[in-house]
Length: 251
Image (cartoon, rainbow, N blue to C red; front, side, top):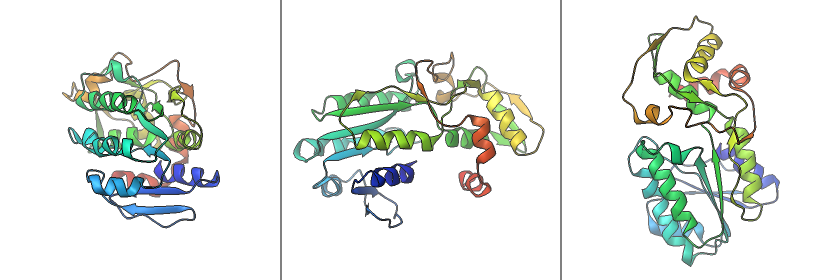
């Protein structure tokens, strides 16, 4: 999603500066800075001279990581030239506070709101890519372990990226309408369609897996009837996914 957002911002005439621990590919209008968000000095250097901040970094599998990544940014904002901060967050956080990751995301939202810097807050449902990774990780020897009671409304990451680019080059808008895909479906249905796209008969085994994320998603907590629908459906996205993209998601 990051690269799609950068390209879209650049086409709108913005000079984009990317900050990441990983080295990036050079591109017109893009300056890539390799560094660590947990380093206050590196963050100050990355923010120097910039007027807009789009914060996308996340590490959902490491407890406390998102707060640690956001803290140096929030501390640096009052002494920076940033006039507009955009934070990418997740639909339904208030309903999913049993999961530590979602408690962190809501905490970071409130810290940005209290920072004094004009804010745009964009939430979305889970990305198609994330759901695919999840189904793959739950699949053992062609059998997918299936936590019961999970309903999702996955969305195309590229479509969300285009909306983020529009927000980034626009004026601060506060909390904007959530983004979601066109289909609300059980995880079982999504997994079945993935198996069929792989050319094999679905083999699902319902297991009450003790994972906070799955508990948080119950009772349709992760979906939003009020969200703006964008992008392809799950089935259409699966059909268009290139084989090399699928292989990359497995690594």
